[in-house]
Length: 220
Image (tube, rainbow, N blue to C red; front, side, top):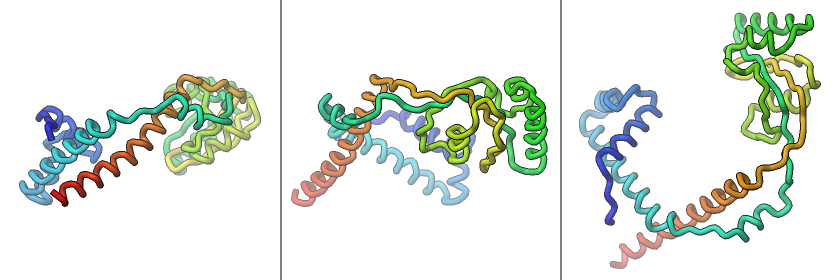
């Protein structure tokens, strides 16, 4: 294939896989695999990793690096796209967990706000997420956001403490101070769309290249 893979590159990838699987380091990950599947299990894992990385680099050379995206393709995808996006300016107070102790903490914060205390002051004193009391902008079209949080940002009365928002990880109080339409960063959007188109082309081209290569090998 002409593809070279250094031991250092392989070690780095194995370490990344180890940490993504909750291991503190490669040695701990190795010990875990050996305890389950023995030395053969570890050797097989390393062999598979080397193979996968080699194939990835081969595809990058033979397919990915040859993919081009024209400005016309980007323009076509952006036809009719809005020039602005709705955003909210907000800050929040976060309490970790959803149990009785957490509920008591968020209720205490809510009581202070109901008495008229400044949100930033209460949040700075009680939030369990450092810096959350500082205003930030967040897009109101972000579908990856927790639905309960997105709804609060979209509908909560401006300047009010709002209701407690419960998620699986914790409890929130939001202070939404402004909603506005923010001009889209045209350069960033074109870059993002370019990558979307390129990745779509790569996926199709890789499938075609693999199929063609397999067919060629069968007939040789």
